[in-house]
Structure formats: C-alpha cells, structure tokens
Amino acid sequence: MGYEYLIAGFEDIALNEPVQTSEQKLLELLDEQLSASDKELLALLRRKNDDEAVLALLEDDAVLDRKAELSLSDEDFRTQLLYEQGLKCKNKFVRDWFAYNMDVNNVLAAAVAIKHGMDVQKVIVGDNDVAQELRKGGSLGKNARLAALVPDLKEVAELAEIGDLLEREKHIDALRWQWLEERTLFEVFNIEAVLAYYLKAAILHRWDNLTVEQGEQVFRAMVADMKKGVNL
Image 1 (tube, rainbow, N blue to C red):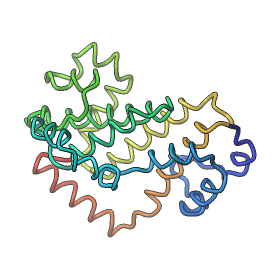
Image 2: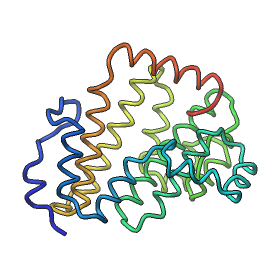
Image 3: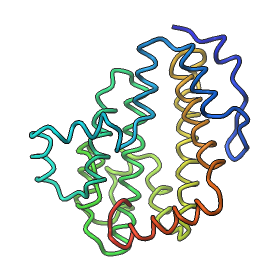
Image 4: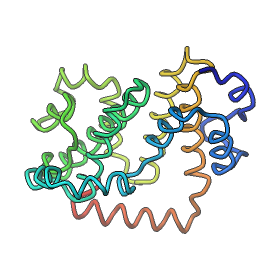
C-alpha cells in the first residue's frame, strides 16, 4: 500500500532541530491513514519492555523457566522478551530495527562491563550471533567476527568512555538516526518510510520533552543502575 499523500504532508525534520508536530498529533494522523496491518507494525515499534503484551508473557510457565536459567535482571529479561517479539515480525524493516538496537545496546553494555570489570554474561540479552560473540568476553576491538557483524562496533564501544550518560544517549540516537536514513534511502512512499519517519520524530520528541529537571532525574537513575551493574 502506498502512502504518497501521507508522506507528502509530513513536516520536514532533521536531527538536533525542534519538531513542530506533536507526537500525539502525528499518532492521530497515522491512526487515520494506516491500514490495520500497518498499525500493528507501528504498535510493535512503540512497545516498551513493561507493556501489557510483554508482561503477559511472564505469566507463561515456560517463559519463567527460561528466566530462571538466565542471569539477567528482571528489566533486562523483559527487554529480551521485547526484542524476541520484534525479531519475529514478518516485516523485515521492523525485524532489522529491533536487531540493530539489540546489537548496539549489547555492544555498549559489554564495553561498559569490561571497563568496570563486571561480568559481561549478566548484561547481554538475546541469543543472536552478536550476543553469542559478546558473551565470550575479551577485547571488543580484537574480535574480527564481531567487527564483521556490527559495522558500528568501534564507534559504539567508544561511547562507553563518555562520562555524561545523557550525552552518551544522544550519540546513540545519532547512530539510530543514521541507520534509519541509510535503511530507507530507497524507500519512498511505503510503510517502511512512514515507520522510519515516526521513529525519527520520536527521537526528537524524546529530547524536546526532556526538561533540565527530568534530565537530572534520568541521570541520577542511570548512575544508580550503573553502580548496581544493571540496565547498562
């Protein structure tokens, strides 16, 4: 299904520039224009690790048995379940988006764990090739197979050296933005272009809505979690 008229009406957006259209207004527009199946894709992209769809999985005995076998924190296990849902999506763009974010977050978590002498096994989620390589431990820079699997490996690993956690998160969002730009370079009026636009707008809204006070609260919470060795 083509979305020529929908996309033509989108506001032009750019990284680090304010967005005029509110997230609620954009969501209302997408709800009016997207097909039922495409709305499901958008809903999956907006899902968080504490959404009902994820929490419902924790009522399954088989899922709880898996949790007992892993050394992940409760939040990281929910994150793994969320990634697993995304990786099962029939739409390749959505699958690739979840895979990319899982790989980037895992590489950064491993880099931070290595830097602080922590157990890498306890911060890696998922079971794809990247996750398996990271669990082996060792220097990230000397792992040729990992470098082949993660094109942004060196850049992501270096983010562990940024002491300001909010600044680090902005760098990660810049990588995500670049991925979205490259991934949809030849996607013009299809659902992939629409979803990429929403994800980029969501990045801008997240930082626009973050006040100084909220930023300090987020920073303190992230530091507390870092000290506990979780949610890296």
